[in-house]
Every structure is written in structure tokens, then in C-alpha cells.
Length: 337
Ligand code: UD1
Image (cartoon, rainbow, N blue to C red; front, side, top):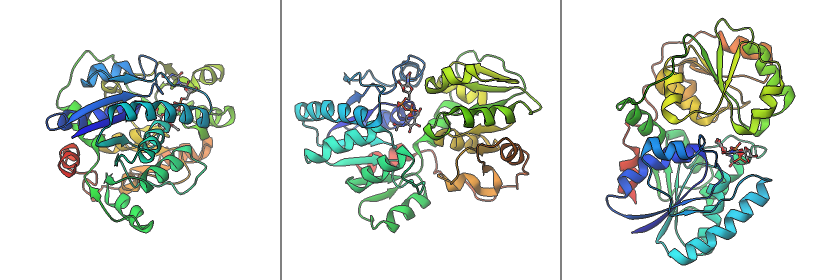
């Protein structure tokens, strides 16, 4: 089959890397980068480290309000799909690039295959929730990472062509862990912080998070997403080392050597789970319920006291097993295709 894959944002590079490797053994893949993430340490470094093939198209669309960004991607992707005439479109996760790809394809009657289908937060205030609900609704094949994602789709009446494949992020984690590479900077005893969600990227929220970090018993390392760079540096950040965004391997290095994780990233809360690191997630609802098994992931409000309380929570020995599959999600996806 000829398949067009659309990626654009950092986590999608990681996911596409593992699927592409398997997909290209059997199918022709045309890779389109929307340009949503463009800094070299947000994009190129992942292509290099994970051996992702050069994109066939780079649309160079970035920044601006959600509507403008998504609309510009939609117009460009329609042109690419009209020219390439693929038999299917493959998209990942829940970013504006995902939704733009899905909308462009459905209007041209091109079947959509959605990897990481069925995730639900439960509130449309989160921009990604809109993207995932709409993409799932118009997808032809839905590849779910977990049992709960399958359940979410069933609740919405989506039961046809739903596959529980496991999580491609777990594939990526195992793949990279088996191939340690490069010289890792030494960081010593530390906590790991990431904050990038729109909801938490305001002065009041970030200042509260930083106040909590100032009270921890070891330095906190925060690779700052470009969205928050100016704000983070302008706030008092005692005990926090603000560093540039890091590639996938360096992130795993920071994770594997940290005490605990504080994050609002869907990817990092799972990676913390894979690595057996306790995590505090700065969101008011769970999005990856399995990571909360045994109290290993705790939700906290963006309030200093709540964050510190959740960071000191005891972890119960986990008996939930590995809910994210067996590290062969990519093979199962390609099999289903
Ligand atoms: C996007 C996704 C989010 C995902 C995240 C991963 C949407 C709605 N959100 O959020 O689901 O978790 O990617 O990181 O699609 N910027 C740069 N350089 C870059 C990338 C971004 O300066 O390389 C700037 C942009 O110009 C923009 C801001 O950061 O002003 C936010 O970027 P954007 O792509 O809109 O959303 P993310 O927060 O990255």
C-alpha cells in the first residue's frame, strides 16, 4: 500500500520512528512533516537519534493561534494528498497536525489510521481533547494503546476496526534502552520537571510550580519547552536548572537517574511509569489511568502545597503488571493494516 504519514510535533517523531521501521518493510510510506515543531532540538535531533527517514515534504507551518495553524496545515495537506493519492493516511496522537491530516484525508475519501486512539481527558478545554475526539470519529482503523482506550471508544459507540495494540511509546522506550548510545552529561541526584501545556503555561501556575520545586531536597532539572522559555527565565527559579530541550536519549538519561518526575506531559508520565519512577502529573484529571496503579502517578493542582504533598506520597508496590503491551505495538499495527 501507499501510505502518507503526517507528523509535526515532538512526541509524534518518537511514535512514527518505531512504526515506520516496521511499516516500510511491507508498504510505501510518504512522510510529511507539517513543521509544527521546528527548532533543531525539538525536531531534527529526533530524526537523527531515532533514524527516522527524511520527510518527503516539510510544510513549514508553525506557531500562531490553533485555528490559523490547523487551517494552514489542512490546506497544504489537501494538496499533498491530492498529488500523492495514497491508499491510507496514518496519524499519531492528538496534536493540531493530527487533526489537520485527518480532516484533509476524510474530505478526499482517504481512509484514516489513527495510532494512539481512544484517549480521553473528559473536558474540551484541553485543545488536544478536541483533536483526539474528532480524529477518532472519522478514522477507519483505530489503534488503541490500552484497554481503557478501547473502553472509551466503546462508550462513544466506536467498536468497528478497533485494535488494542499496546503503546508505541513503550516500544520506543524498550528499543532505546536496549541501544544505549552517546555520552550522557552527568547530572547527579535530581528531580525532573517538564511543563508545557497551555493550561499551565501562565505566570501564576508556573510560579506555583517553581515555589514547590524550591523546597525539594535535590536540584530540579527542567528542559524548557520553547513555549515557556521567556516566562521560565523571568520567574524566580531557586533550586531549578533551566536547560534547553533535550533529545530522546538524553531525556531517558535524565529520567532513569532522577528521584521523581513532575510533569504535565502525557508522554513523560508514561515513560516515568516504564522506568519505575514515581510521578506527579500537573493536570486535574487522569488521561493515562493505568499509570496511576499503586499510586505511582499522582495528580496535583498547580499549587505549591498540593504538589509537595503528592511528591511525598508513598508508592504501593504495584501489582498491575505492564498495561502498555509487550513492546511490539508497531508490529501489531502493521499487521492490522
Ligand atoms: C504541541 C501539542 C501537544 C504536545 C506538544 C508536544 C497541539 C495542540 N499541542 O504543543 O499536544 O504535547 O506539542 O511538545 O498540537 N515553538 C517553538 N519551537 C518549536 C516548537 C514550538 O518556538 O520547535 C513555539 C511555537 O511557535 C508556539 C509554542 O512554542 O508559539 C507552542 O507550540 P505549539 O506547536 O503550538 O504547541 P505545543 O505546546 O508544542
